[in-house]
Image (cartoon, rainbow, N blue to C red; front, side):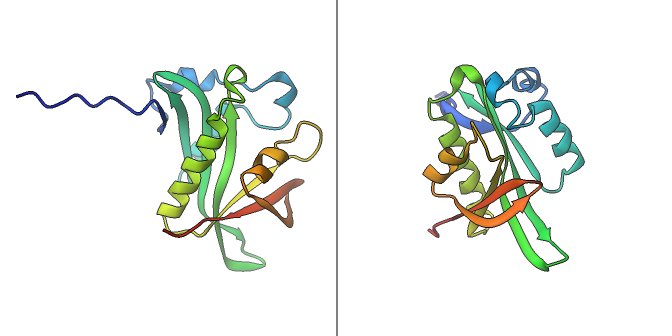
Length: 164
C-alpha cells in the first residue's frame, strides 16, 4: 500500500532556499510604499549578517510566492538601559503589490507571533515608519499598541501574546 501523498498547505511560510530565492527577491511593494519598507534583498543581507537573531521566511500561497516576512528573535533591546530587556518581533513585512489586501500580511503576522509564542515569549514587537501611507492602521488593527518608544525614528509597538 502506498503512503498518501501530503500536499502542502496552500498558505504557509517557508525558509528562503535556492529554489525560491529569485522569486522572493522579486517581491516588491507598491511604489508609494517603497520608502516605508526595505527591499527583500536588503532584508536577506541583514539576515545573513544577523543570522543568530534573524528569522526570514517566504510567504507562499499554493506554489506562488506572495511576500516576505522576517522576524527578530531574542535580541537585547537596550543593554545600556536594561540588559534583561530581551525582545522578539516583526522586523520586515513585504507583500507583493499584486497580492496586497488579500489577507497575506495578517497571515504572516499571525504566523510570526505564533513562532515567537512557541519560543516562549509573551510579547511581540514591531516598528513602523510614521507618516502618509504608514502601516500603522494595519498593525493597530491587529492589536499592537505603541510603547512610547522610537527606534531610528520609527514607532515601536507591542502585542501581548496569549498563553495557551
